[in-house]
Length: 239
Image 1 (spheres, rainbow, N blue to C red):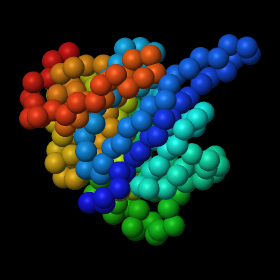
Image 2: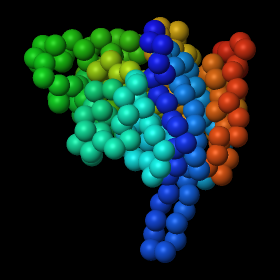
Image 3: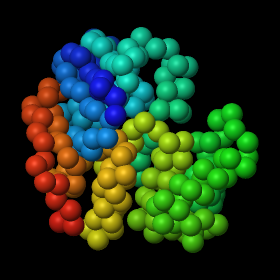
């Protein structure tokens, strides 16, 4: 494991401007996340938790401060450079799954590999390995609109894993799932963490946060608390 943090925010701020109205989303947040951590980000609506994740995942840019990813200052990177970082360094899992309805499981998971300079055979190997990693190989030929919500989220996780990213960002990954299915997805994320994956998960559910090893709480764009779960609680998720 590297001695330097994987993700490091130093006094990061983000403001959105609409005409003469300036809305601060983050107000000078300083926080570090090491490789191999499972971090839950919590806070009420408007607290800045999604903005924090979007900047960390190169979907948004900061207004002030410094963002270092694996020791490299990415604060001033161009949009093209950030797009490469998104493709090569991070994987995303969204509440709404964001799968292509008329594409198969295999085709959906293959999508991120299309931009990699590797052979089709290697892309197929990577996709099949990712699908097997979430126990969905028996559904590889099914269209995503034929899947249950839990199966769709497993496919979304496989798609996030396929390029072996440095970190997986999960934005309310259980938000569209029932309690039993949500527990299964959280157990899967916990297993990926046990296997050495770095995971940052935005959630509003306290029980879901119990699966993380650390919890960041935001309020009004500020980091309100940063606590470590002494013993991660598994199997106790309730909506």
